[in-house]
Length: 279
Image (tube, rainbow, N blue to C red; front, side, top):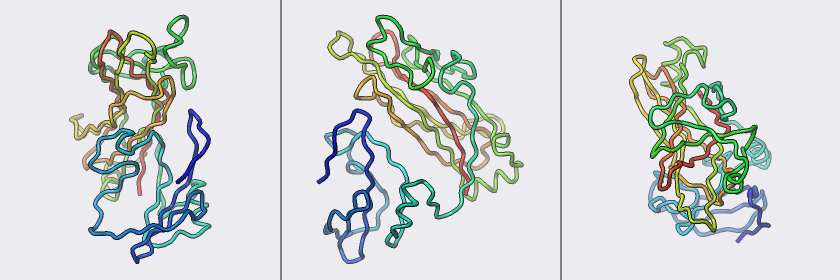
């Protein structure tokens, strides 16, 4: 159906699927029509899945791939050429969003673990040099990145107050939450390379978002999938969006890594960012 030159860091393709209302969809790749496919909806959709079946476990065998999905638009009419160009340039907005940057202290492990509080195990950092550098990735940027130390599990967080981040009063914050507000955490993740060695390292890692009320009681904690990245030594961009629940007053960026075997817990994460969005 579609091919491109192989590249370790991937390539970018732009897809659109237009349903014509008469049991056909038009498929466009990079804004060029690829063809029409028969499609007869049998039920109202309750979930959108990109890459694999909704009931399948993630994995290449189930039709999933390592990729970044961005600039997704769902609407009940065809997208004009101008709208298509705006969408993929990042300038298309069906409505206005307000963006708040949650300024994280030491988001890439450049200053050891300053700014982060370990709740389980102990967060640590790496700056690979010498013999171990061959089996550990170089930092995505800077001189270091986070990992979980010699712990079966490490969970660490950094907390921010929502009124401080947004500049809103408590009442205005509650209104913004009711109208639609969510947080999105983004990070780069890599893994240890045991290819050809005796190690069976399969340690997994993730980032999550926690919301707390005014008494610092947890309202919700959600992690993205705990994964070991492959190809190893390669940095992959990951992200997680989670709606802000009512009565929330604080947000945590949460690091987590679970050890599968061995001594060190090699969940490598670098360059973390956190934003809040309000409609």
